[in-house]
Amino acid sequence: MGTFKGHAIPGTFLFIFGTWWTFAVWRNYVRSRQNKQRYACRCSYPVPGVPRKFSIEGIFKIVACTYGIASESRAMTEGAYSENGAIIQHNSMYAFYLLNGVVDVLYNAGFPFPQHTDYVAMLLAVTSEGLLFYFHVHGRAHLDVMVHTLLVCTIVAVVICIVAEMCRPRSVLASLGRAYFCLLQATWMWQVAFILYNPVPGHNPWDVHSHMDMMLAASVFAWHMMAVLVYVGTLGAVAWAVNRTCGRFCRYVISGDAEDADDFRQVFVKRDM
Image 1 (spheres, rainbow, N blue to C red):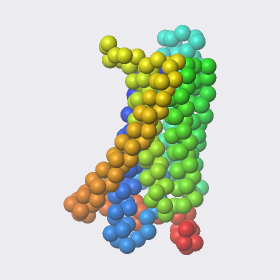
Image 2 (image 1 turned 60 degrees about the vertical axis):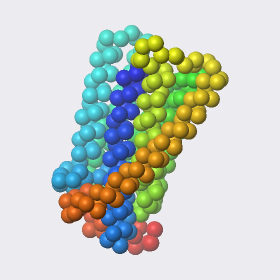
Image 3 (image 1 turned 180 degrees about the horizontal axis):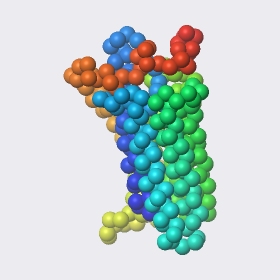
Image 4 (image 1 turned 90 degrees about the vertical axis):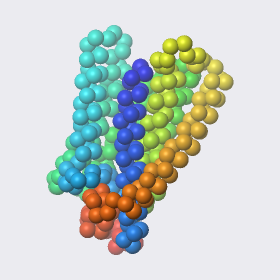
C-alpha cells in the first residue's frame, strides 16, 4: 500500500461497503418503525431483487480480495526484496477479508455454521487489519506514523461497533456506528494517499517531519468526521424517501423483520435486550 493506488483502491472498496451498510441500516430502521417492529442488526444485507441466500457482499469481498492478492503477489515478483515484508502484510489482510467473504456466502446460503459466525469472521478480519496497520509504520516519519495511527483508531472503532452489534442485536446505533467508521476509514485512506503520495503535478508536498503539518492533518481528520456524519444523515434521508416511493419492491432489502431474524436474535428479543 506504499503508493497512491495502494491506499485509494482499498479506500474505494471500503467506501462502497460503508455506503451500502448505511443505506441498508437506515432502510431497515425506517421499515421497522413503519411496521411497528423492533429493529434487528445484520452482519450483511441482501440486495434488492436478489434472493436473500445469495450474498452479493460476500462475492464482492472474494473478488476484490482475490484481485488484491494477485496484484500484490505480482508486485512481489517484480519489486525489490526489501518491499516483500509490506507486501506479505497486505496479502495477510486480504486473506482475512477473503475468508470473511467465503463465510458470508456460506452463512447466507444456509450452511450449518454456529450462530453469528458471520460476525466473528468479520471481527477477525477487521482485528487483523488493525494489528497489521499498527506495525506497518514502525520507524517511519512522524506524519506518516500519525496518519496511520488515526487509521488504526477508526479500525478499533469498527471492532467496538461489531462487538456492540453482537451483544445488542436490536441497536440501530451499533449498526450505524459500524457503517460510519467504515466510511471514515475509507475517506481517511484517500486522504492519506494524497498526503503521502499525491500524484497531482506541481503540488505542494506535506513535510512529514513538521509539527505544523501534523496539527493540520489532525484538523483535516476532524473535518472528515464531520463530513462523514453529514453523509450518513443524507443517506438516512434518501432511505426514508426511497421507502416512501418504491413500494413493495423495497421489501427485498428489509432484513430486520421478525420472520427473517435468526434464532440467536430471537433469544435476545425474548430477554428484551
